[in-house]
Image (cartoon, rainbow, N blue to C red):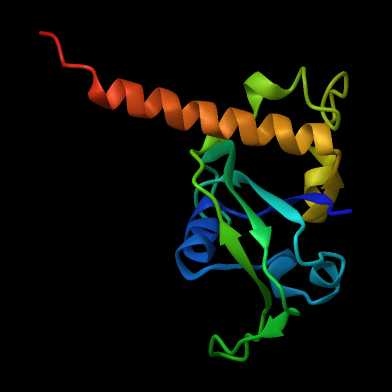
Length: 153
């Protein structure tokens, strides 16, 4: 059975991964990626827009399915060799977490819900995976509807 995961990274890093078809977690460490298997679902949560920034975003920023194959290492220069996995990213809109706090298993009734995000990667229930996917899809539908509405002066 395939698992669902939350990975944590700044939105700028998630956007690069989406554009290039990969995921990277925990500053490029290999061990967390070995827990993820082909067919697993991944949702990225971004606490900030920029890496190391103080700009709060607190939103789900991407979702996808891990492709077949193993994790692999890349050379980014300067001695940095992070590990990655390939992902088929799905259409999804960035969606704030706050409206979902009361319905997600990992946040409901937990005032310290953000603590587990510090680990960079953790598994989630199938229900949470589905709730987040629905919210990200609904946000896209709302954005599309709003874009088609005429602007009124």
